[in-house]
Length: 292
Ligand code: GUN
Image (cartoon, rainbow, N blue to C red; front, side, top):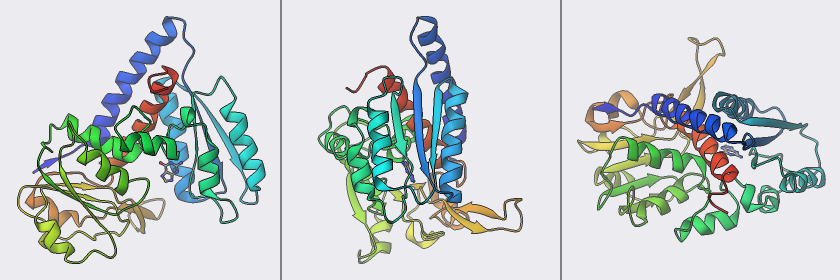
């Protein structure tokens, strides 16, 4: 069994990017600039956004954090999105989800200029991804594709089961892995809460991607010998062993599943660190006008 080290891979990529940014700046270009809009004080969102801002600093980007309280109106938020769309100094920006119930996430996502949508959530970018055009691919699936590449994991003709059909992870993952080329050319099944015979489907899988947000959902008896298992789950569970009082738990019961795998991602330190790095990659692509 080989552990897929997302933390190390992510560190390497960030070093590569930092080097590239130095050269860009030396040649007279401005530093890439990522902005993040954060509404409210949800602990998970706070720490994700803090991680994104830290990553910017690490690679030499400029970053801006724009904060609102939970009672911000949809109009105020949309006005900020328009302002960021028109700010030439900003190469890309994200609005951290989830948003409070009185604000339409769809409206806000659609208001973002696709050319600055480094999250890859805008319908135009999702559509471009679906037909294989250059685009901003959402960060988690892109991070997983990068891990498959860097660990030279064969995907052509393989049976992949993606568990979870979210717009951000499951669905784009299934599209990317079924596309022509590498990593791709796989036969992909998308499983979800209404799927029957999930265990049998998983036992047929060469690669399992677990993205359901249910800690320990994938058990040892669901995985065939030699499978590749990618764990996207990052649920916070109470813990007496950490200062914060919680720790991250994946969707895969690691101790049971790992001994059967050829490759597996740990939680933490697997997919998670790659997600933020993918956002950084997208911001650099935007600054270099590689997509649009
Ligand atoms: N909420 C959870 N993941 C993400 C993400 O990748 N981007 C944004 N904007 N919100 C999120």
